[in-house]
Length: 139
Image 1 (spheres, rainbow, N blue to C red):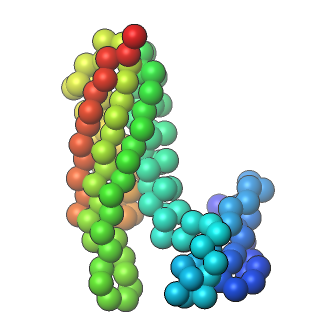
Image 2: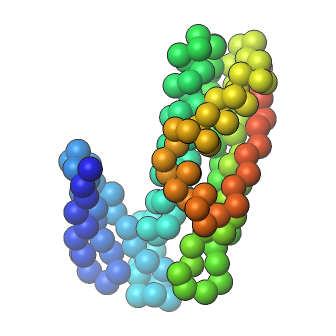
């Protein structure tokens, strides 16, 4: 895996991934940025959310569960001093489907958290991580 980051101007940067996708990043105005794009740490948090959502949907689909929707909201706290690592992250899952069993969805979340989601497992080295689930019956 690889990624190249190029400084544009001010505190704006563009990342080009090894698969050829591009993502822009910018800083807060008080740090010289123009607030035009996500901060790098926001992208780390988004990556962890995307990673676990991917896992949960894939695990449920492979188990032939009728999953219809999956949203993961993350709430994070950071250290007050440098390096301002994440110290606490709350993953809040809203999963919808037809006749989904809470135990099956909780198992998928647990497997993601403990085995498959590299991003959240890595962030768990500095942050206390918690998971919550809201299960919704779909029409």
